[in-house]
Length: 148
Image (spheres, rainbow, N blue to C red):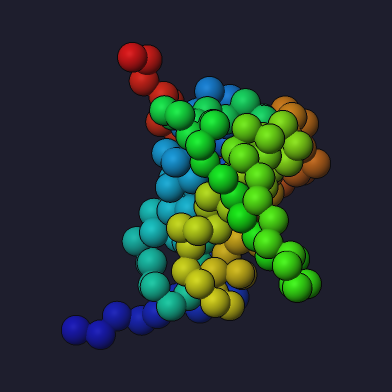
């Protein structure tokens, strides 16, 4: 039985608002990546970008479990000879908390042009304010960290 594929032009994209305060980075990133990819919709197709927009606020208050704050490192290359750069997760959260969430979500999306199109629908902000109020984003419940 053949099912008709949805047209990307006819997809209704919703906006979701996620508050990262007190949330575990990995759990937050997996749920955001699922929404961006469109796997929560019945019309999901792995080769199409059917996902919704996600706005993440309070990125500086995200939580890393275990000793990841001290031991996790982020690496990237500048493109110049000897341009390998490295920074700890603790310093990255202090200087660029948006990148911590962006890089975690981007690692969970497909690689290539499809993944690059999906990650453009992710908006991450350091504090509680965001400029997307006119899109009327719906709050999205994300699993909270469990106290131990």
